[in-house]
Amino acid sequence: MLAARDRKAKYKGIEDLRRRRMENLQRLVDDHGSQAAFARVYGCGESFISQILSGSRNIGEILARDIEAKFALPHGWLDIRH
View (cartoon, rainbow, N blue to C red):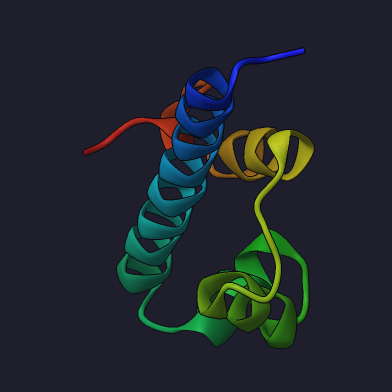
């Protein structure tokens, strides 16, 4: 069982990663001109991208790696600050 301060640090790290992935996704969307254009290239609905950027949906590990692969980005690109 994690001590309270260790749990707090763990969850802060998770929240930081979530925020970074959203910021980097927004950067990719901006590079494509719109959510619709990004969604077409990625192969999903615009509403899916909208849900992620609004915080209704998270970018998990599998989705992050799939986005990186589809856009020929290095593994872990969504996880680091640019």
